[in-house]
Image (cartoon, rainbow, N blue to C red; front, side, top):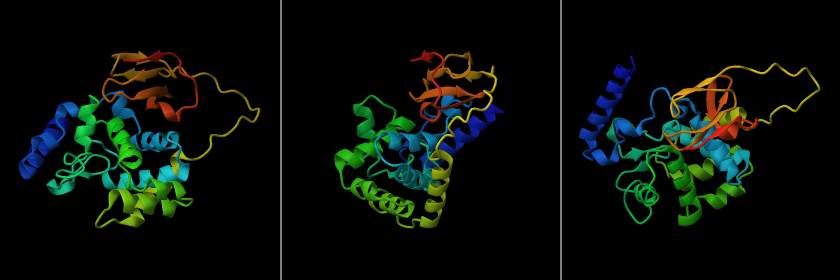
Length: 248
């Protein structure tokens, strides 16, 4: 089953490569996270949301960005534009443009840091680099946004600069992100403490089962994941302390 899934992916990428004629601008099988790994089980949308909040944006502003990325790529760093178009990655940077051309582009940015341009962390860092260092990509407008509509519109118009934007879908995704990731965790109310869980998570990096709240730096994308109720979640999303840290 896993072999068949990988075969389908490989065929799809080969076909896309024939259409655009630039294999170096398509993710290879080595760029994809294994079918069972911390990276595969992580939540990319949640990771992106918490990344932008960690940079000082409000939850509304972060949700506005994530809503756009959901519409562009479902926040998949290996996304290739449907039909063999030039869009690549979570923000669908264009081949011949911000993906690999000009003074500031994702490929040069990644190579200069010894990073994988198809990794989620690299692409999030490049978005922030474009907004804060390159400039002109809407950071001022996003920081000024106090409503979800303003945040979605600012990133859509200043960063994505899309043709057919489908803003209603971007708004729907942004509201979903704000609801799912932006809510406050309930505070303690003096109730009975639940019994500790003994659920484990299988680590593709360490090739063994890890206990609840273990934190592992994934060899697949360089991100930190924490075992939570039998599933890996990105480290930002779990308020509990790590039960052991396992860096690369």
